[in-house]
Length: 264
Image 1: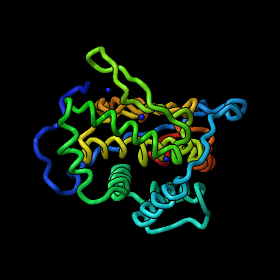
Image 2: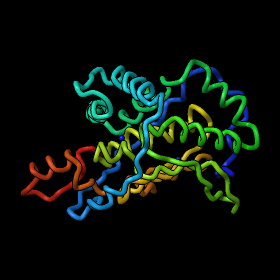
Image 3: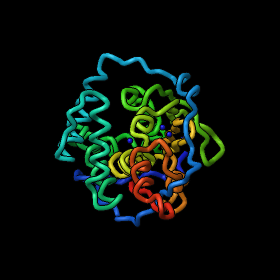
Image 4: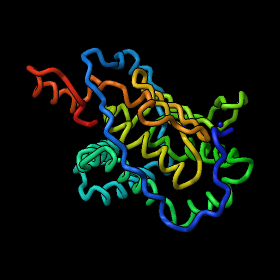
């Protein structure tokens, strides 16, 4: 499981108090194996940016995990972060398509927020300053509350389409979720794409996430619209050689040309 003026204005009309609009089912875009897929050097792992756990980290982890378990209908016997990663793998396996997995992940994210909070944010905050204030606010909240999941991250300035810049970015130095899951498919389908959809559809804030599968960093760009799935570079990445699912698939397909990733 590598975060801004907007490309188009955010909606300013009142948002009806109901659940997120249903997402259109999209075709499956393959993530293909490569025997030369990118891996992390051992000496680089030793220099990873360590995040020191905060007072509320266990609370956040247990809350997030409980929501995932409720959606999946299964829990791991492992404790802590290791158990969370196992539940994320099960979430990836349970869907009949990547679209099902992403929809389930959006439901998990929405369940973390109190009733009406998301609707009120979209109604009252998003219209201010053409959405800039909302983008800056969610960037700071993300950096403040999500380091337990992603590792050390900081708010940074990102370039906007009009040539200016804004402090609505979040840079994750080395994503723990990607590193522990060791799977491009889990990163893309349980984190990147559903998180982008959640912020746009449920909070009215466009988001582009740019994971780097070579060094495990990730750049969040709040207020920037993501590209179409067919044009998203992250969906064209090969599986990581260290991915346990890729390893098992290569063993099964050892006498056959390697094709679509089992997580794609």
